[in-house]
Image (tube, rainbow, N blue to C red; front, side, top):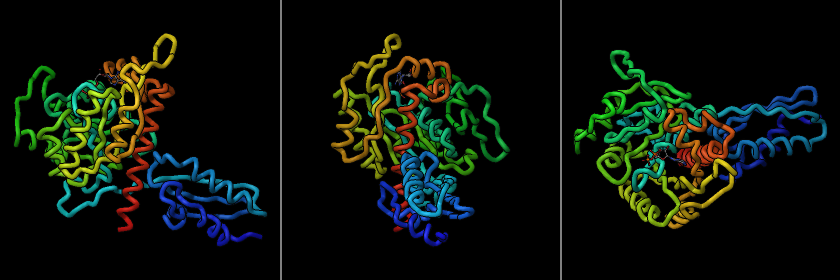
Length: 351
Ligand code: ADP
């Protein structure tokens, strides 16, 4: 009769497909229990949005089914997100494990739409997620998520409203829609800092920061305030957008923000009538940009009328139509991003 120790030995040979390290050595296997020819394996992933979840579970099942004396394999998968940032003593957000700033070279490429849908997609996978609208000059997150209620406070900190499973803060909650903000330099920096520090974020697995377009005071403040945040660039596929996105990417690098990858928005058009695909803005620009800069291409999102309607009505497509191609694309990207962050976290843990 097979013993539990032997099962551990078999599991030790299974490697994480991306890191090539044994899943037992990585500490992913929390428990192995053998009862009446049935084995129960408890597996803890490094993110609930793990892109390799199915692959890992399949490998475990396949290896254990080969064993004589085992009729049934049950896998219980949980997840504990690791920090991809070194939390220094002076860190202003010590309970936030991953900070991802979403930037773009210019406005209108769909950066805020991407930020909202990505944040919700991560939460739909079971992660604790916050979304900070860093566009102090033109905050559009409140409208895109239809948040109207006033922000409450517990007397010490602001309580961020929660919608679709994410905590949200925006300067837009404190000004009226037609108030132009003419703040500059230090006042802008101070306002952004307050959105980080004066808000009760609690414990977060991921904090998504929607940056204003271009290169200005806000990315600089972010880099100075949270030097260990990561960056993602949103671009559209045409060559003109490409060179502007490149500028944003170079700025991130200058500020020592680690750029994880590029997301291509409006990659192709889905005709609402025939559901056919058309490459309105050309294709491949995002991938080309990512390759040129040696960062990951995280994926493309179609140009879809339903996305625009979702933004206008305050119900992002990952909520209004989760089975749409666009929602699936956001989920794929969320998983790839979470996977990349997990790799960074694991490497950080080992150094
Ligand atoms: P940015 O933050 O880059 O300025 P937004 O996210 O505000 O851009 O998007 C600009 C407009 O484009 C919004 O009306 C939004 O609904 C729309 N939009 C963004 N992405 C898509 C898409 N993939 N398909 C259709 N409309 C989109």
